[in-house]
Amino acid sequence: MKAAELDLVLDRYEPVIGLEVHAQLKTASKIFCGCATTYGAPPNTQVCPVCLGYPGVLPVLNAGAVELAITAALALGCVVHETSLFARKHYFYPDLPKGYQISQFDRPLATGGSLAIVLDDDTEKSIGITRVHLEEDAGKSTHTGSGTLVDFNRCGTPLIEIVSEPDLRSPREAYLYLRCLKQVLEYLEVSDCNMEEGSLRCDANVSLRPVGRSEFGTKTEVKNVNSFRYVEDALMFEIERQAGLLEAGEQVVHETRLWDSGRGEARPMRSKEESHDYRYFPEPDLESLAVDAAMSEGIRSRLPEMPRVRAARLVSEHGLPAYDAEVLTATRALADYYEAAVELFNEPKEVSNWVMGEVLRLANERGQSVRLEPTPQPIAPTDLARLLENKQEGRISGSAAKEVLAIMVDEGGGDPLAIIEDRGLEQISDATALETEIEAVIEAHPDEVEAYRGGKAGLLGFFVGQVMKRTKGQANPELVNKILREKLG
Ligand code: ADP
Ligand code: ZN
Ligand code: MG
Image 1 (cartoon, rainbow, N blue to C red):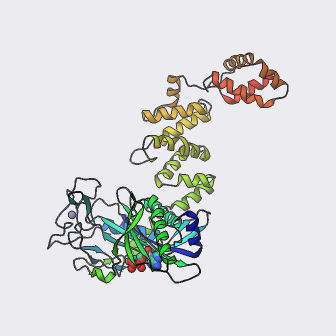
Image 2: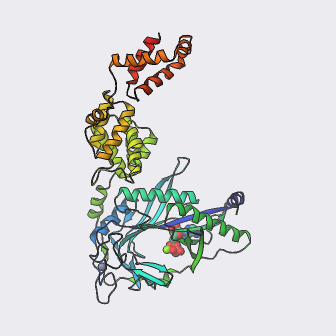
Image 3: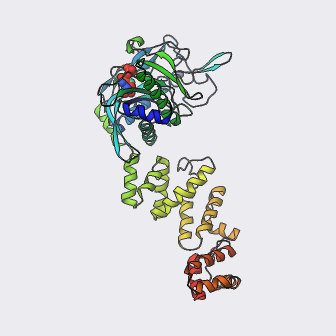
């Protein structure tokens, strides 16, 4: 379907979208046994009788996983229930050795929250969160030419499933929701949300309804949408496909489809199973999950400042432009870094410029992220602050400061003044030295001098540029301006 045709379709049909997001919780061990959850270990080295589902073994719930799940649920404004239940969800798949997954079904951990997302026109939209529940992950199958390989390391990894209400109305909104949710989970340090490593996965549900109608149409579920880039593509594909059916007077079949990013299409996987197909029943080997009010309130009181609140504070307390505040609060680590640096050098806008500019650039160049912990990257805020102080006091010029910063990053810190001396990058603030340079420039450009004196005041910049060229950018620009004006009269 061409873009114009799609526009026509979207004039007639409104997409309705709800996302089911699985996030791997950041615990050291699995949800029902002590096996490690480290990513990338050799296949089948992080397994035990419990996560391999041997008969007669007993699961023991990981309290750390429960705490992280509650943290996410509270931050999403959900009610955390004092009692919730684990249930067995039965299905057959080679990477599910028990033949069932321990999940939560009719009594989930938390329900009834919302997430405020910011749309492209800067308006806010609240997306309902139906539920947040705990479950275990399955293993991982790799299909090869000669058969299927199964790695059980991931079996029993703790997950939360976050189910949204069908409140999203376009692929773009779905993308913005996912991005916002990821940011929140990262701030909470509940999940790494690393889509490449599979620690954040998304199933997208979508249906169409004629514009103006209130009932929803039949939905399909697209699984395996495991990259931000694919969310919009996969939904757009489904919208076009469903619209084609409806236009032809056909019906959308309630089914599960698998997104194939290589081909850019969602292929049918299975007709949609109903919950009774899973033969859910309460997990007999686990007690009901009790979360008392004291525990919930304790976790609530420790919730970190959320990104949008933090951005608003940087605007009101630091006087930063909204744009800066948004960039700097993109990740909690970056915001922490910026605040640590301002603490040491109290010029918020100047620090913001350097962090958003050179510091981020140098980190990107090195494939690093800007952070404080466990070791500061790409440079310690104390070193950055030292550099900015020297620049402020005129000992280092703006252009030299960039060079010095790059050297400090390479050398893991150092004294900016020593670096400047070593490399001959000192700012020339000595008037006599500058006068000599300026006189040379004036002598070399008699025509421009005449034009300037004849009224072309704009030529001042030309002369400044020439002086900078002769001094390799080291001349103190204010002083150069002042002396030039005097000499040119
Ligand atoms: P199912 O029983 O098929 O799993 P659920 O009611 O549990 O469906 O909802 C699963 C997800 O699908 C939720 O994110 C929900 O918002 C979304 N959803 C439900 N109905 C529709 C619909 N008609 N169109 C689009 N999304 C829907
Ligand atoms: Zn185990
Ligand atoms: Mg469901």
